[in-house]
Amino acid sequence: MALVADSGNHPPLRVMALHALLYCERLFYLEEVEEIRVADANVYAGRRLHLERVSLDDETPELRSFDVSSETWGLIGKVDAVRKRDGAWVAYEHKKGRCRRGDDKEPLAWPSDRIQAIAYAVLVEEQLGEPVRQARIRYHADNVTVLIDVDDSARHDLRDAIERAHVLRDSTERPPITENERLCVKCSLAVVCLPEEERLVNAGGAEVEPPRLFPSNRERQTLHVASPKARIGRRAESLLVETEDGRQKIPIEQIDSILIHGYGQLTTQALHLCARRGVAVSWLTFGGRFVAGTSASPGRVQQRIRQYRALTDEAVRLNLSRRTVHAKIESQIRYLLRASRGNATCRQTVQEPINRIREVLPKLEKASSAGSLRGLEGIAAKAYFAALPRLLSARVDARLAPNGRSKHPPEDRFNALLSFGYGMLFSLVHRTLLGVGLEPALGFFHQPRSSAPPLALDVVELFRVPLVDMPVVGSVNRNQWNPDDDFVVAGRQVWLSDDGRKKAIRLFEERLNEAYRHPFTGQSMSYARIVELEARLLEKEWTGAPGLYARLRMR
Image 1 (spheres, rainbow, N blue to C red):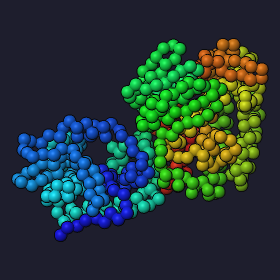
Image 2: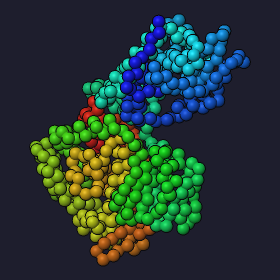
Image 3: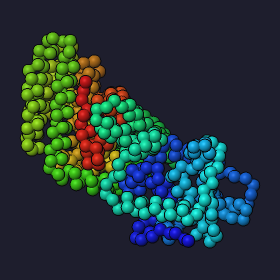
Image 4: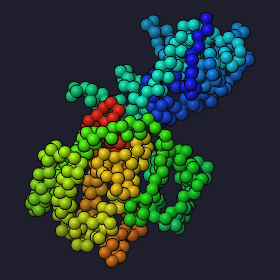
């Protein structure tokens, strides 16, 4: 009896998608519905295996690595190899890892590998017009081959898998995380799914092993182009950066994003390479104001639909706004206390602003609107910026001390440093949100009154103190800035000079690479990774695990 699946009006499924489905339904959904795919070291190793190690024996005939498809089954894929054994065709799959073991230790196929091999067998059968009654899976780590019968039972299983895939494709909700924690350890999309963070919530305060699936450090670095006459071109899979000082060739796999400060030029060929390799590009003015940026994650329609549905709910917006403001204000208080610790004179001068800020905290829970929260945030900010100058050492040049907070434009050297730092922070958050698939224009706290996307402004609030304020105050106290050489004063406006911008960029990047223990996960990671983690935790507010976002606090 021939059993086939009705593909209906569904687009064809990749056979590899069925492999993901049987491995973890959340993985299937992320890859096939939301089109989020991450090729990690294991994936690349598997690809090399298929290219280099598909060797069976000297029997003939043989077909290797060829495309197969079927409108009847609604499947497409590329089978590793097909060979004739005893006059019948056999489909082969090659796996880098180990096989499954039965009760008596006999080698078995993993369910995901089995359904993949069955799918390739039925596609080869249809393509060649000859029966394929067996598939074989070679597990190279164990050096064993597992035989799969392609019978009616196998075809039933294939049909059920395809039908389940269609159901998930039509759904707008992500499936829950898998109950099998071991599957997450080797999953390339663990950094997107964050299963361990959800398990921490579900544990309800019970002692669990801290998650370590989210990477602690940056795998690549940001390329800052600050020279006004810079030109970024392309040479093969590398970027070629030309400045007045010479030419530098940088492999694209070493870069996660590019920040062009001022008027540097980027060729179309280089932009195409960046887009293909997921490298976001941002343009900032010389003063640090964000101008524009490219997206490293096109599509992601389902993610944006869920985000829109959540952030059109006033209760959700107010809850997120309240938690964001609370986190920001609490970090301000803790920083002022930390910076004045051990200095009685300094503590005395900042105590009054600290008290004013503390008076705001209990009022946040009673705020009934975002407007009320913005008013309370403004009161705290005024007291905070009044206290910042009191953290500066008496040895600091008076020209580096601020007089309140001035933004557009900055009117003193200290505010020029803050504005430039906030600009780089905004660019980091903006490209991070795009990278994780969120729409920066759909926010919850800030109003869309300018060209700055509200959601980016919302998330920035969590990181102003640790990533900009603290490094700036510390660097000023260490006398790292020259009031004459590092700044340009034009009337009431003050900007960073070329040398000053380079120092500020270095200060910001060094801070991003510093490690900090996240208060919720307990994992020590770089600040750059914490920004990404908070963006992903924000998305979980409307994808099944609310309450994780904005727990970040300064110690």
